[in-house]
Image (cartoon, rainbow, N blue to C red):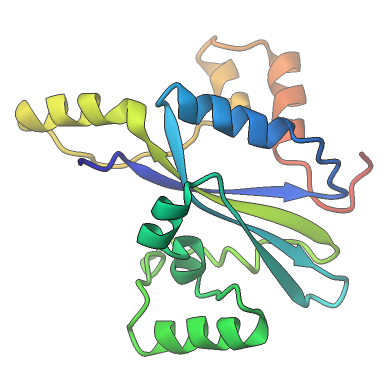
Length: 180
């Protein structure tokens, strides 16, 4: 089976108010074969910067066994408490864990999580993109880069009104500690 493009999304939460809506939406996207959650971690960082990690997933048991803990390996974090964190760090240092963020655009995912907040690290496979990617490859094409575009940048090209873009950008990038 061809795997679709994979993306790590890190979502921050000041004071999470989870009511099942996020899981329901991920399930809906899975059922429509749009995306698959390969792995997900909830990371809680206390006021002193100490981490508590919880594994989240909507994978079947067989998929979970096949894929293992992928997010933890990507960011150098184990999920079995301090022992798992140490194992993840050791594996990364020994070259046993992939270091996907080592170029000029290095991303210290865990450092970006503000103290006294929570984050969800969600590794998504984009099923919808497989046929498009395959068509591009058959045409001799290849990926040069990718990235999300800020709503503020869409104002300059006329796709959004300035007020709407400012409100959306503010919602998307709200930092821990700001009023909710």
